Image 1 (tube, rainbow, N blue to C red):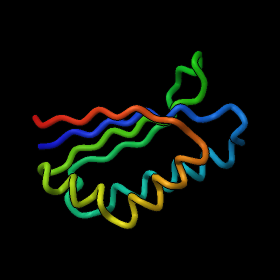
Image 2 (image 1 turned 180 degrees about the horizontal axis):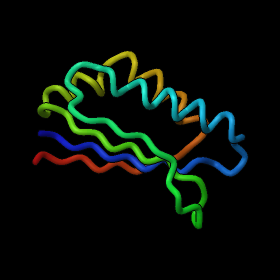
Image 3 (image 1 turned 135 degrees about the vertical axis):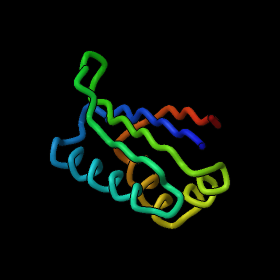
Image 4 (image 1 turned 120 degrees about the vertical axis):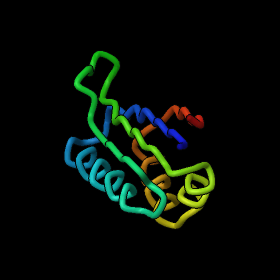
Amino acid sequence: MFRHIVLFRVRDDVTDPDVLSAIDALRGLGNEPGVATWTIQLSLDTRKGRIIVEDGTFVDADAFTAWRGGEAHRVVAERMSTIADWWVGDWEE
């Protein structure tokens, strides 16, 4: 299995409807081939701002590489770059 965790720190000037729309777009990425589990949630802890948590498991590293290189991921990543900065953690289990 291949794990992929992203913490998106949403910029302060982004509206709540735009955050909810981004969450919907991120959730759609879980329907791609090779995704074993997929969770997108807005963190309950807002002390450091609004954080969107992406927690995914892929069947293997090759599935992750294909997913990351896909058109759906490119489109959503481009969109997220306009509203957030992020930190990524990837590892094999």
